[in-house]
Image (tube, rainbow, N blue to C red; front, side, top):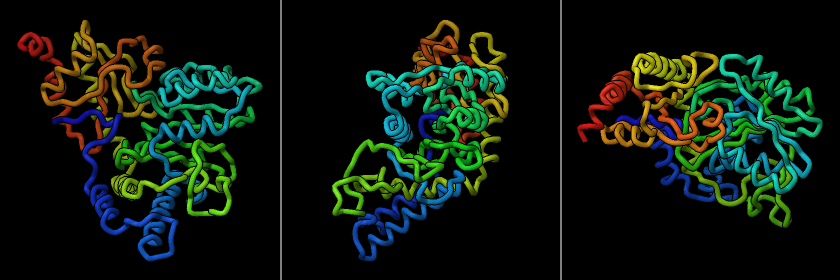
Length: 384
């Protein structure tokens, strides 16, 4: 199988990730932070080492700023539901994932409103001005994807963060598609809340995510409460992160696998991975543009305005039919709405697209085979 669905989750996982998870099951089987015997303490230290690695990777002030979550979606929900109150206003981009839009839709019943700011691919000044116009006196939070999971459009989040702070609001950045590809620092970039998917560009296992706090003293209301191994006499959730946001037993094998994934990315180099993947997407775009039956929806993807994610369609065909054809020919892509109907509405692709997203393991020959199958789509379809 040629796997080109890495925006959903990277595959295969690097060998060090698999080995770290196996080691966790062999050597770190005790509940961390709960007891004073050797294996429990070693497990606690292993998790602390992952916090320290992630804090360094994302430019946080310390390990206490790193909160383990089961997904980027959970991190986004924690920020949204933990920081907003009735009467608050939110600004979002027109590229947001349902991990942002569905919580905000539910929260409308609680008196929380939002405005959608238009983005302008390739024109960061216009995008920034659009966010400026969307700000209101009661704007408390700006929630912004770092890059679209459908079209690869990248937003100038550091500039948006500076604008947000001018209005006395905070910013939450969804970097599900950029963590591990694009360097980002919560401290230098002024990102109050950074929501991270562990299983995509960081090459960790599914079921892992992070919330990185710029200011660990910034208290969010909790989504869940329970045992943390600390302050057990109190029936109240602890005030201090990360324990405040991590009730219950943690996913130790997943977290140790995530640390190995971050270390893998560091060894390879984010810029090296990014440039390698971008070259493959640029190559694919340029050749798709020469195929008359293919529809493309963005300008040619180039740095710094895009990340290596590309959507297309074949004229007269549904994305699902194309995806089925490619799957029958051993090529895995993602078709449909990609949990981001707002982005499809923006680009006029309400019926969905075929999405291609490479990884560090994708070879040029695999892109060539994809192109060959697309060129032969009509023949292949008629021959079934």
